[in-house]
Length: 312
Length: 243
Image: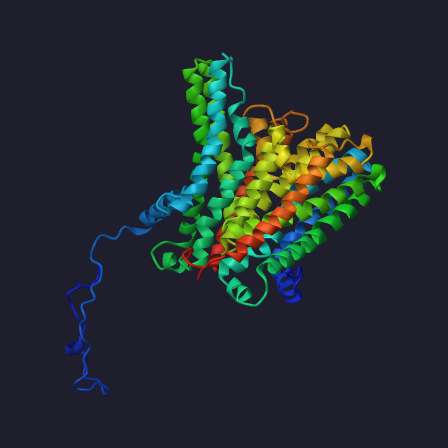
């Protein structure tokens, strides 16, 4: 489909126009066009996903970049191992913490990981102006955005699911009730999927607004934690004043409490809310479902819009 | 004896801290606090427990450390990051003076964005009933000084100052502090909370895990030690190799 690399357009073929001089010629200095297979958009997208996913755990990067993700992953899995050890050593009938509660319990660690991984994925491309290089390939802008979203979602999911797998394996080895454990484990995985997709859309959107990594990290952390502290404080106040119905609605105001309430309503039945009661699946729980889906969609849409302009 | 304050360094640091987006992020947090305070007061009226929950659970636990990280590391880390600190260090100003000046500026900026809003929020929430507003203002002021010293030191020592500072503030103090009481012995939040515990009336339900003497001694040690060691590190600051 392309010209044969050996064909040259030298002065030999030049027409004798009015401006052509007899001794003018363009030397063939040996540039050759690519004649190998063209792998196309989908391959580019897949490579970008793989590259970003590896980068999120520091693989293929310097040893210094591996330290923090691996340290956080260790901190994330350590309590799971301790729980399994305790459950087996003391002959418990069930794990000390349910699978869905584990991610909520470790949320500060997951938040830190998200805050580290998201700016690393997009801010550096903006800072070192590598996005124009991506966009000069067959890759479309939407491909770039979806690839980054997919990579960060998978990274967060792996980060959250690894301790759950450990818990599940430990529970089976410790001969806890297999049917109960399997149901809980699957609920935990489903929660982790929703958690990962929501957080990747939110964090990438924030990170795409700054080319500076430090700013991105601080901004993602701030957006994840400040509303969380604000929402939990308000929940306690409302609970103290005796209107536990309002507790559910305040929980919609931060990503952390949103995930907590969502899992409580559809995947288990307990929350960290002051009442300890999950929103009902039909009533307030429906609001949690809608806000979760809506927020994810809104962030993804804004991210796509952002990349229509940025990065040229 | 070297000077403690250098006006030009202070002016440059103020400008770096209060310029552009950094100031916006720092201003958002106190505005959120005031918004919460107004909302709680409007919905429920003055209530001491609500005041203690908002000021302790949001202001002192989340807002003060976050503003402290932004201002404390922002006072020096960006300069080291982009290399412009060379021009500052090549001037005939003692590096200890540079650190003390930047420390004072960081305290002033953090104080502006935390101490004042905390007091105002306290007044809005319950008119300083049981001295709660005043107690938390004092605690915030103490925390601001210690956080500024610690995060300034982090900014000199590490390139990942923001991340490490946030890990300390959120994981160490918030997560581990609530699980293991012993962590409170090494937590600025608890050290300053002990001041609030002393000032607030006993019915206000403000408690800290450390005693007043321990808390104040540790606060002083953290502040003085942080500033002193940051000065030492800056004095032996070298540009070779790390690039």
